[in-house]
Length: 340
Ligand SMILES: *[C@@H]1O[C@H](CO)[C@@H](O)[C@H](O)[C@H]1NC(C)=O
Ligand SMILES: *[C@@H]1O[C@H](CO)[C@@H](O)[C@H](O)[C@H]1NC(C)=O
Figure 1 (cartoon, rainbow, N blue to C red):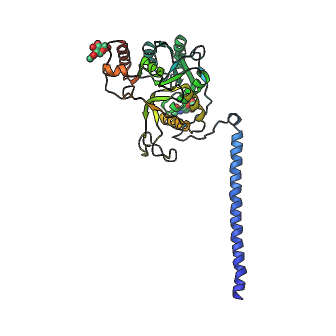
Figure 2 (spheres, rainbow, N blue to C red):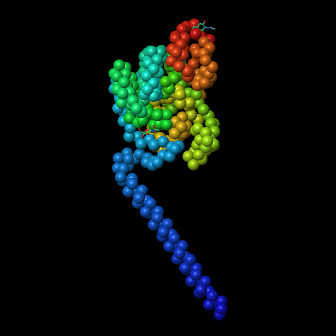
Figure 3 (tube, rainbow, N blue to C red):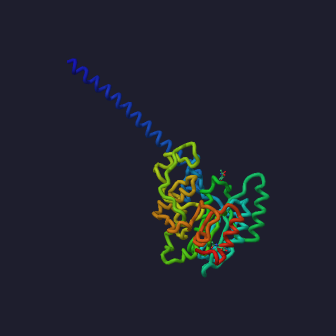
C-alpha cells in the first residue's frame, strides 16, 4: 500500500519537473525567435545591403576591419585601363602626403611605358588625407593629378590601420576597369622596381597567365598569441596556429583574374587588420598558392645596401631607404656595366 501511494506522488513530481523543463524550452524558443526578429528588423533597416547580398559585420572590434564596400572613387580620370589596356599595371599604394615618393618613381622606374615590347602603366592609389591640413592637401593632390593623370583616390580615410580597405579598394578598381590587363603588381612607394626584369619573367612561357601570384612568399608564419606585442591575434579570430601562405605585401604580382576572384571571395572571408594575412586567407579560399621566386634576389625586403652589381641586375623589387637610393639604383640598373 505504501508503495502504491508513493508511486503516484513520484509521478506528479516527475510531471512537475517535466512541465518546468517544457516551460524552459518555450522560453528558449521564444528568446530565439525574438533574437531572430530583432535581427530581421535590423537587417531590413539596411535595404541596400540586403539587396546586394553584402555581408554585415557589425562592430569589427580591434582585429577585424569594417569594409562596407561603399567607398567611391573621387579621383579617377586616368586613361589607364579605360582607353588603353596595359600588359602590366604597376599599382603603387602610397600615402596622400608622399608626393616626394611619387615624383621620384615618375622620374625613374615608371618612365618607360613600353618594356620588351609590352605596354606597362603605373597608377598611384590613395585614400583621403586626414588631419589639420587635409583640405589643403586634397587641393594639392588634385593639381598633381591634373599634371599626371596617374592617381586614383577613394573616399576612405587613408591610414596604416585602413590598409586592408586600401588593398580591397584596389581590387575593386581593377575588377571594374582592368579585365583586359594580364598582370598587376601591387607595390609600395619605397620599392625600387626593375621593370625590365619583371616583364621578362612575366613573358616567360613557364609563367602562368591565370591563377598566378608571386612575390616574397611567407609560409608557416606562426600566429602570435602574446597580447602585449604588435600583430597579436586571439584564437577567437584565427584558430589555426599558422597563417596560410601569403606574398609579402610590399611587392607582389598577380594575374588579373586573381584580383577579381579575391574581390569575389572576400565576401566570405571576414576582413582582418593584417592585410598580408587577409590576402593569404582569400588565396587559400580560392585554392591559389602563391609562388615563391626561385631566385633569392628577385623580391628583397631587407638587405644590406648597396646591392652588389650582380644582385641589382637580377632583382625585380627591393626596398630602398630614401629617394636618393631609389635614383641611384635606377641609374645603375640602366648602365650596361651593372651585370653579374
Ligand atoms: C578607416 O576609414 C574609415 C572610413 O573612411 C574611417 O571611418 C576610419 O576612421 C578609418 N580608420 C582609421 C583608424 O583611420
Ligand atoms: C658596377 O657597375 C658600375 C656601373 O653601374 C661599374 O662602373 C662598376 O665598375 C661595376 N663594379 C664591378 C665591381 O663590376
